[in-house]
Image (cartoon, rainbow, N blue to C red; front, side):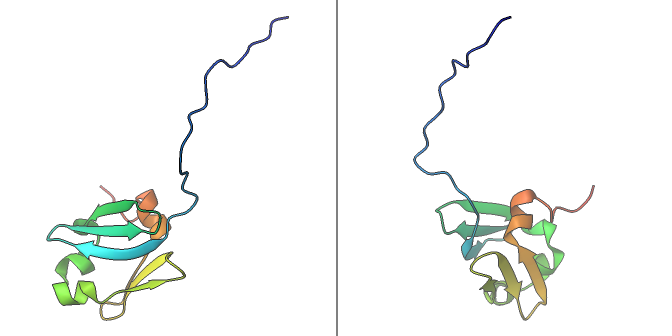
Length: 95
């Protein structure tokens, strides 16, 4: 009988994220950046979201963060996105 010993050392991290919660949004011509409460920034192309892509800058900037940071809502556009879906790439159009 043989036994094996795991000789790899665990990496120490100073911070391990447990959830992704939105704090703010930023837009440019082609992208939406979601600023998360833990300091990360998630950038996604506006092409994934035709309603947001076609919206005016003031319409894009009129958003609400719901559920303590788990969702995004644009009342003027009737558009809703989840942070979990964005993190998973779930809103990417099929090819």
